[in-house]
Length: 72
Image 1 (tube, rainbow, N blue to C red):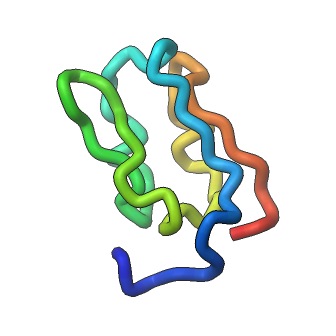
Image 2 (cartoon, one colour; image 1 turned 180 degrees about the vertical axis):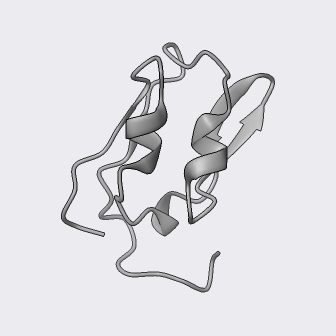
């Protein structure tokens, strides 16, 4: 989704890899494909695509993801 951008480097998206349990829900619910799974952990692969919708936060069972709505 690299062609869809709002503002670069303004997202408040944060992923705590220590809290990630590797469920992969973030990769399934993110409409912008911000996350990918590597070695059973989520990784942010397209930070600037995040539109701060909160789908990842609302579906993360281990609270490994946080985002502040309003910028993207």
